[in-house]
Length: 112
Length: 118
Image (cartoon, rainbow over all chains, first blue to last red; front, side, top):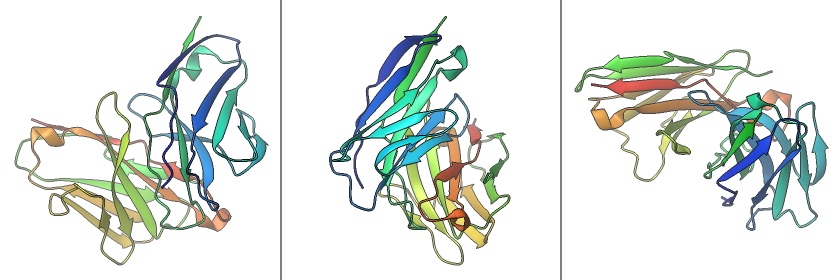
């Protein structure tokens, strides 16, 4: 399983755009990149998933360069409620048994 | 979207007793579920893969006799912490995929179970 590396923590202010980059140098051909958000004492919540180029949904964008060795989660105009831990995971989702290993995650602190 | 439900959300038990945690996929079937454990201010650690109708696959270092996993139906997996001790106190989280929506569907997580062993 590909290992991921993210910054341990980031600070931002309300209304700013936040970009969190994840490194996954050993990503395999069949691997997808998935980002989760976790609040204290809750299970992780799916944010976005992609394979290559750019993916956008109602809450975030995911940018993946051509070599797929990294990815960037972009959160537009963050609010205080976006303060959470964000995890980047890489794995083969198409396999029913495709387990995902969590890295250390990035603790995002949004300040007023 | 796919919903994974865990029960109970929290439990307190005495040392030496056993505790069962249930994980249900509410609106989809899951032949495979994953159990994670999370200590305070740490990341999630994969404990085991629960397989419907067969034995669970445990990660290295996880005692299978300590953490009994049963996946008797396509919507229910249970984790039983046997002879619990204070060091087993942790946040246990299960997850599953809804492959009916297509390949590479993401994992959906339950809201976790906070276990405190006194």
